[in-house]
Image 1 (spheres, rainbow, N blue to C red):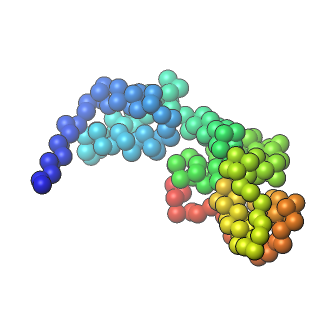
Image 2 (image 1 turned 135 degrees about the vertical axis):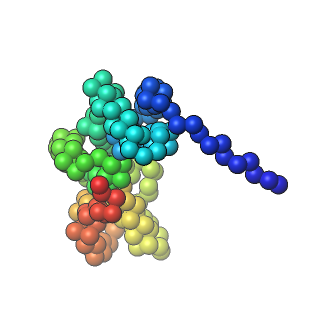
Image 3 (image 1 turned 30 degrees about the horizontal axis):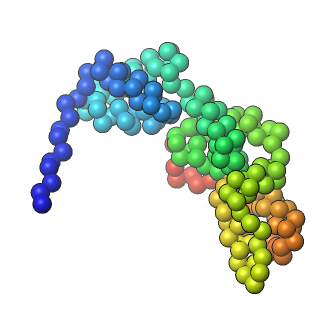
Length: 188
């Protein structure tokens, strides 16, 4: 069986590239970094293509079609309200998507300002239908729940409070500083 060679795309001119960017944004919210990455596959190679991409990004910002601040606010709201994720998870996701640190800090401060982390963790548990650990493997189940809640972005203190409410023996060996530090590798 032979595979067809991928067609070499003809680079788009600036007007066509702008149209491509608008259609891309109409389908899904994107950050500036993400949109630039997509446009690079369609634009001319080299300096001319980069200049065209920069002009298009500026034009999209002027038209208010593209805004990292608005993206961060909408993304944070959706992840907090629908997915019930904690602050740390949303922080890491935004860094991975290429949003600047100062935008992330302002957005998360505003969004999680009056949120009770333990109550949000309870909502996450209810949404995911996590049952309290019981039986002979209760400790193993508690460790799994702890890991799952940590990945969902909740602090160790909130997790331990919930486990204590369930009358589970808590092994408080998780270092809060290690779990709270987002990875710096994806940062721009």
